[in-house]
Image (tube, rainbow, N blue to C red; front, side, top):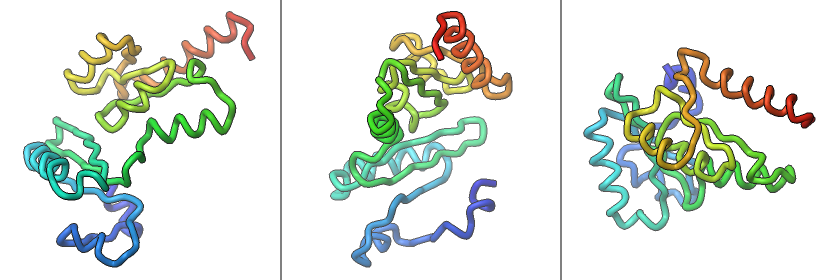
Length: 162
């Protein structure tokens, strides 16, 4: 569904190396497929000659046997974007909340002073949430984001924070 909705902004390049040969760096690359194939592809990218010039960040949806690898320039991530935005807005890390549900959200959740993992995340990530002190929200289909945000707003109101 995502591909269909964004078809006009997607360019398919095969072989992938051709995306880097025109002298103009792409903003982002994506590779998608079955979990097992994408895990192998991730290992291949991380052990390739491109590993120092390309981040490879995984998203997985086991129920659909779908994985997406985001290929970005080094240092580009949701966590870095959140850090830069907070700095630009003058917001302290402790006052920042990050909510996510997949591997590509981990550095963002880790950076934020208030990390929240959705209950629909895979078991391994939910275990990480417990060991790292992240809040575990209800799953998406139980309005987990709304539950977390409403609780945070209620705490702020009770504390007199505007």
